[in-house]
Length: 189
Image 1 (tube, rainbow, N blue to C red):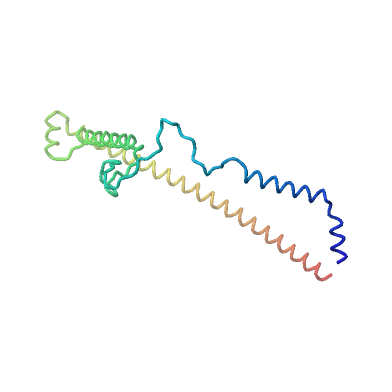
Image 2 (cartoon, rainbow, N blue to C red):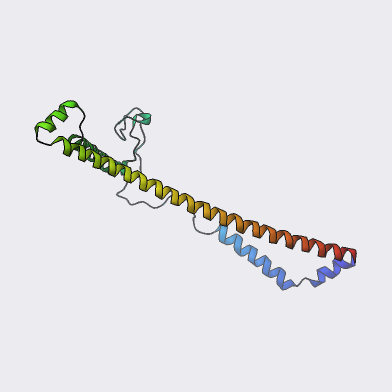
């Protein structure tokens, strides 16, 4: 009981009054303040409120069906220009490939005959064919050499990394063993 009386004596009346008036002030500002968020925002007199509603009986075409998943285009509308550019490039590449086949390739014996009649001698045709085969073989050789060099570099790098890892592991093991010996010596003392 004595502790309670001492506590009541230690409370200053000025602190109690300050807390009381702060509570009253907070209560009055909240209760008697102006309207908050719950009111309707002011609208101009010439603009009516938004009353257009969705009518499920009407048809609202958002986009025309174009196939694909759910019968609409699988391409984002903003990406249509990119899709058109990609299709144009694909068409140009296909035409270029067809032109190359038509100009350089010989698919049938009739083409051999036409080439012969046009004046290209057989020796020159064989020479051209040999050059094509030689250039293809050279490209293959370069690719194999480049791949082998890359493989050797990878093996060297992996070997160096493994040696560094082994060195680090040995050092860590030695440090751990030293720490264990020191701990054992401390425990014995």
